[in-house]
Every structure is written in C-alpha cells, then in structure tokens.
Image 1 (cartoon, rainbow, N blue to C red):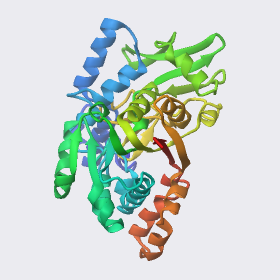
Image 2 (cartoon, rainbow, N blue to C red):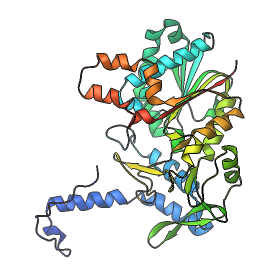
Image 3 (cartoon, rainbow, N blue to C red):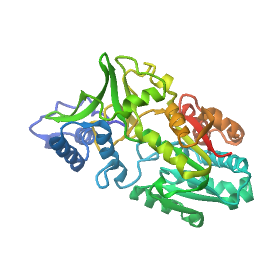
Amino acid sequence: MPPTEPDRRDPPLDPDRPETWPASALAYLRRRQESREGNPALIELLRERIRREGPIPFPAFMETALYHPEHSYYHAPGTPIGRSGDFLTSPETHPAFGLLIARRLHEFWKGLACPPSFTAVEAGGGSGSLAARILSAAPGIDPDFGSALQYILIEPFLPLQRSQQANLSDHAARIRWANGLGSVRNLTGCILSNELVDAFPVHRVRMEAGGLKEYYVDWTQEGFTEVTGPVSDPALEHYFQTVESPLPEGCRAEVNLRGAAWIRQAGTALKRGFVLTIDYGFRAEELFSGRFREGTLRCYWRHTFSDNPYIRVGRQDITSHVDFTSLIRFGAEAGLKPVQYDTQEHFLLSLGIRELLQSEPRGPGYSALNALIDPERLGKFKILAQLKGP
C-alpha cells in the first residue's frame, strides 16, 4: 500500500528540527523516500553504462533492473510474489488453480495417447505453488497419469530456486531444476508458463510521421530520462509486418522480441506435446490498434502499480502486455500449431471451476476462487495452447 500521510491536524513541521517531528511524520517520510528510491548499486551500474555508451535501449535498462545477477529485482532476498510481496498470481490466489491446470495437463496426456512418461516443464515457477498443486493433484485425477508425470522447473534465479526447493521437498523424487529451456530436448509433454512472457525485457517504440522510432534511456541530474532515436534492431520493423498490425502514427508500444525467441525455443525443445501460455495481453490487432496510445508498460510495488519504470529501480517489477499474435506466428516457425486461445474465465469454467465454487463456503476462500474467473480481474487473462506433433 502507498504511504499514509501524517495527520494534517498535527502542527507544522520545523524542517530544521526533525527531532521534534511526531513519529507518524518520520515514518511517512521514510516510507515515501523508500518508495521512490531504487537499489543504489544497480543505479550506479546503469549510470556508468550510460556514461560509457550513451543512451541505452530500454530492454538493456529493463534487463539490468530485473535480472542483474547481484543487484536486480529478481535476485533480491525473498520472493516478490504473494500477499506479502508486490503482486499476486493465480496459483497464490487459490490452490484450485493448480488442480484445474493439472486437469488440463491430463487432457494433454490423453491427447498424446497416454505416453508412459509425460514431462511438465514450468518456466518461471515463482514460489513453486503451482508445481506443488499439480504434482499433488495428478494421482487423484488418474493414477496412470500420476505415475507418468515428471516435472522440470526452469528457474535461473537462485533465491527463487531455493524457495521452490524448500516448498517442493515432498515432491523431490519427481522434480528437477534447469536454468533454461536450452537444456531441455526431445520433450514429450507440456511447456507451461504463468505470467512469464510479460516480464521479458521489451523495446519501447513510437510511430512518427517519418517512421518507427525507439526510446532509449539516458541519465541527467534529475535522474533517468527517455530520448528517442532510430531503432536499435531491424527486427523491430519486421515485427509489425509479421503480426500484420501496423502501429498508428502517434502511438507508443512495447515490442517483445524476447518472447518471440522464447516461443521458438519452446517449440524446438518439444518432440511431441504442447505449449501452454497464461498471461495478460491481446492479439496484435487490438494491442496495436491505438487503444493503448501510450503503451502498456506497468510497474508493481507492494500491490500498487504505476507506469514509471525510472523510480524504485531494482525494487519494483516491470511488465507489459503480451502480444499473443506474435507467439502464434513465431511459434509456427518452430512447428507449433495453435489449438486453443481463450480467456482464463472460459478456460477454467471448461475445467470445472463452477463445481468447485458450489462446494466452497462463502467467505475469503470463495472470493479468492471467484477472482480466478472474474472478467475484471484474473479472468481476463488469456490462455494460448499450441501443439507440436500429430
């Protein structure tokens, strides 16, 4: 929550005598300062890079802020996910989400003619709560499916990996960890992700009368700032041609080239099976229609959000909406065929969430379960399933 202002009925504060300030004012000032300041070591790294190289493309800034191996957001102690963190995902909202995903994986397993070994690869597993629920639910859904199911968690960030290992100790015999999809080959099963692609570093662009321009990050006495220049990668121009949705003049947008590379890699890792992507976003024709004239970049800190990535650098999450058309088009290059694209609301309804709601007593648990399909909340997320193989 944002800092609560001190009581306005308090007497005026003497700036030269902070020792006379009430505790509420001191606490407010401290929280307000913390809310705007980032990680000093990380900021200095970025400042030094800009001093050496000049303004840097936004994905370089975002990559450092989120993924630097020592000072970044995802390498900080503790987990950013959960009620005590910065944001809440579907697996942390209610454990039934994992049960319902397990039911879908069971359907995938049957669609592949019930192979004796079926591997679920979860990329970006957060706290490990989704993996725990899937592995717990599988034997009850079908004992043969439970026996066939193996699990791999793709997690390059050591603090999160350690947390996952602690949370998943009961399933140690069926789970292993990998640092990236590159170590997964000839897979029969499903590669799944929940709120992964939205956190990949993105290019920020704007269509001007003279063509596409890109935003770069510079440093001034006031802090980080944006400047525009020519595109840093020819693939940015090609991207809008691939998704067949030209950006209207005057509009900003985010281009997730990393997402395009990731879906190709997922298709390459599969011998036979599915890719299941759960995230927030739209098809390209809506995302780049002019509806989001300033783009969709969002920053999350203690369950509040802003559109300013240049405060709390290294201490807030940075995301943008996913272009699902790009995942379909670039996935096709790796042999992936779309078999389902729907909202999370309809997806979970098809898997039996209504019956779970009917058996859930009214109260916090019911509200949390209903949030998974609320079209104004998590229910508006999108589900993309892609198939490789016969």
